Amino acid sequence: MRGRWYFVLRATATVLDYAVYWSFVFAYIHYFGKPNDQGTQEVQGCGHFLVLSIAWVLWLPLMEGLLGRSFGKWTCDLRVTTLYGKSISVGQAFVRRLLDPIDLLSFFGLVAYIVAKNTPLSQRLGDLVAKTRVIEDETLPPRREV
Image 1 (tube, rainbow, N blue to C red):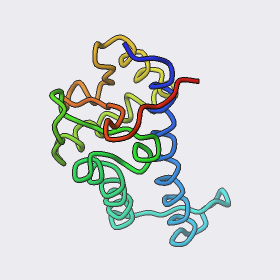
Image 2: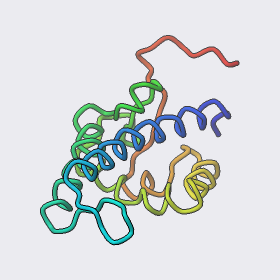
Image 3: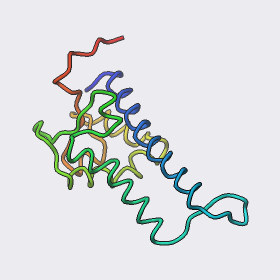
């Protein structure tokens, strides 16, 4: 099993990725939204849903599939690989991200933490289904434990 520092890095990477994505969503709604009866902005229609979905695919699965890491993972020196340490495909990245609502949004990531803490390769549900894992980038000098 991995140490506490590894789980802190993974959580930080996830928070960074979704902070950037949700910042885009809120900016998009602010710019393109219309006021509703509650006094907040909203967007309606398939076009807006399509734009926000494409932004999610470009921001997370496509980056992980093509570069092996998202912005958050890059910041935290992490990489997504296959079980054998090879580059993942865009399809695998998409599958692992499809389970984000269960892994990350239910109980504030507690499901992902419990599953990762109890699997030999520290995989969350999305990783188990996609046959991927997250590793510390080996091309960088080793991180000093604090």
